[in-house]
Length: 151
Image (tube, rainbow, N blue to C red; front, side, top):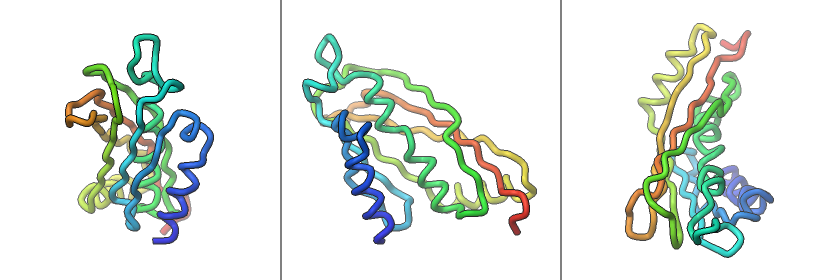
């Protein structure tokens, strides 16, 4: 539990997040659920008064990678290889992203990388506004491989 709490505190003072107002609200001790929020402020809004797209993308950047790394352990390499964002409506007010992974996903990743082959896994998250409407749909593709020499 200390590891998750400590990471949450470190991420909240990490300059790219602190500077955009991104706040990690929750990291479960088992790294299976992470909640992130970002209020609309003068320094993270675009020309037309909505959330800047780069900030919306940044609020989803490392979380699936961190979650999978923590659940697979040190004998796997996990990289955030790519991401895409589909803007659905203007983001105003506080927006949120809820990241979830489960045991069947972890089991599938372990099986897919058991012989040392690389595996690409695409995971999706919705960024929602205060009314629960989807502001943006984000996909993140992870590169996952078992380290050579790992049992």
